[in-house]
Length: 227
Image (tube, rainbow, N blue to C red; front, top):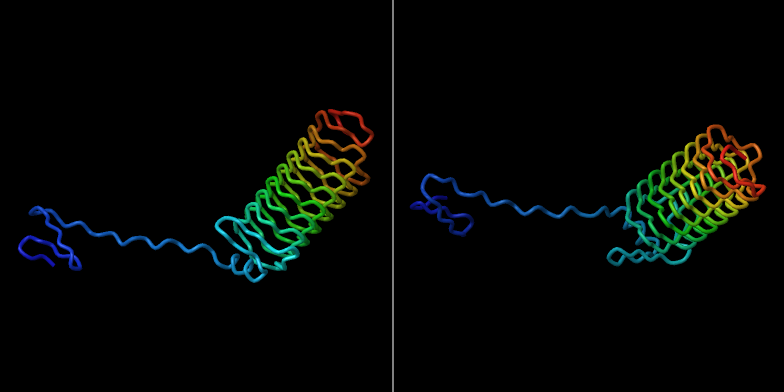
């Protein structure tokens, strides 16, 4: 309302020069609420969320949970049951997933940089284009897992079970695959430059188009052309 050249806004007085329209007060934007679906699933499993930290009790049941895009950076998920969980695009950077059950979980595009997946079950998990750089997958079960285009640079896959895994065009440069089981695995177009395959099992593996370079073969010899 204008009164004698003075604009009144909800009790506040604003004096403006003649001929100049009064400013329109912007309504403060309501902060977008963080997705609650994933947090609800974590809370139900007994996990504690404090700021950016997520601490779950050993063996927390998150099977089938919708955790898509949830921030689980450095979360403690030791022995957690995440079988069949939706973790697409989730941030699991530096998370502790020791002995966790991720069988059949959807981890497409997930960030597992430097995550600890020692002895974790990832059988038939979908890790398409997941970031597993520097991840510890010692003795992990990755049988029939989808690792197409996954980034496993410098990952530790010592004694990992990758039987029948799909590693098409996966990045395995500098990866440690000592004694890994790669029987019948699909390694077409994979990058194995600098990888350590000492004592690895390659029977029946498809090695078409693999990139070799200073790669250690199962017999301990180095090659630039193929094992």
